[in-house]
Structure formats: structure tokens, C-alpha cells
Figure 1 (cartoon, one colour):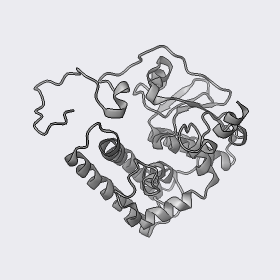
Figure 2 (cartoon, rainbow, N blue to C red):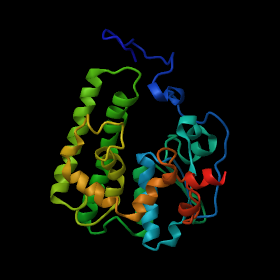
Figure 3 (spheres, rainbow, N blue to C red):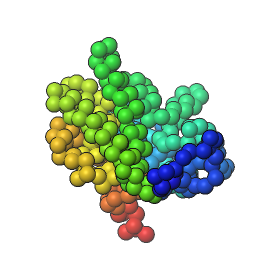
Length: 291
């Protein structure tokens, strides 16, 4: 990346200097492990390796919702992966997710462990495993999955596009910010129009589509993303705000947002989650007091 307006790309790109702004230390043009490190394994069937980014929150929200419904098989251990420290490039993590992105899930409930990576795939896998939050009627299922995959395809423009150039890039590039701000607002308008005629994203029922979209777009209109609420005029999206506030009344959503969180109020940070009681006894405010 160059901060000069007359930059001309070379005929062949080469990686001769770190780039990526805030994330330069962990960005590289190759995949695979950088160091040997096995992943910890707890006592529950489901082992989650994650961080409370929007993508990570999707899965912990679903797991907490499943437990709230009484699905005891959804008990899980959530292990913290500090992506800014490059922990996603450890050999154990790469074995679960060769793409080195959080979240990653190992299901050890069967005769052989099953790995699942990519947040959308994890949501589908768990929803189908427990028969919850994914409609079975064909039209309703198609609507839910369409919105789920809308999120998977759209959020990179919000995060890697708008968020990166607005908040993280080492230089402010007007063209890039304008380009991705336009797309972010277009996506918000898509959702706002949908929620003007539908209580939840996929219809009258709360589904994994809501859980996937809420951390990204609900978080944006609530002002949690990139300190950009005023810049994007998020107050305009009244239907998204109504929906986001509705989801925030759900105890499982509140719990799911706490798991593997390392920023914000200490009372809302649960670095690891191994038991339901951890929410009462092991949040960072209590850990700090005990220490």
C-alpha cells in the first residue's frame, strides 16, 4: 500500500514489507502453522476456539441459546484465541481450521472428532445437530439460509472494507473510505427494509440468520463497530435498531457476547467458558478482585 496518489502497481506483486496497518504483524501471503502448539481440550463434547469478534459471537450466542432451550449436549468449552498475538497460526489451531481464522469448533461427541470451521458452517452444523433455530419447512429454510449466506458474503465489505480503511489503515484514503462507506450503508438499508416488514431477519421466528447478522450489523447501529456510528448516520436505520434492542433482551445473547471477550467492561469479559457458573464467578472483574 502506498500513501501517494500516483502509485503504480508493479507487474508482479512481492511481499517485501509488512502491510495491513494495525494487523501488519500477523498478515502474510501464505498459510499454515508458524509454530507448534497443541490446543487445550476440556471435558465437554464441543470445544470452541475463538475470540469475541462479531464472527466469534455468532457461535457463542447460538450455543447459549441451545443451552437455554435445554439441549444439554450443547455444553461447551470456549478457549480464548488471541489473534493479535498470532495464536491462530499454532499447529493445533491450523489442524482445526487450515484457514487460521476464528471461530473453530471440534465436536468430540461421536466416535471420531469432527472439525467445523467458518462461522456460517458452524451455525448450520449446530442448528442441524440439535434441530433448533433452522426451519425445516422448505420455504422458511431457504429464507433463513439465504440471509445467513447474505451475511457471510456482505460482512467482509463492512469489516475488511469499511472498517479497515476507516479505522485501521495507516493512511486515510478518501476513495477507499467512500467506496466502502457507500456499500456499508447500502447493506444497512437492505436490512432496514427487510426488518420493516419482518419481526426477525428470516420471518416471524428467531433463527441462526439473526445470530449471524446481529453481531455485525446490530453492533454497527448500536455504535460498537469502528467508532463509526455518527459517520454512518446509524440513527437512520430505525428498524435495525428495534431488532437489535429486541435481541439484546435475550439472556443468551448477553451471555454469548461475553464469552472470549477481552475488551470493554471487565464485568462483561469471560475469557474462557467451561461451565454455566463461570458467568457468575469468572468474569474479569471477579478474577481481578480475587487476584
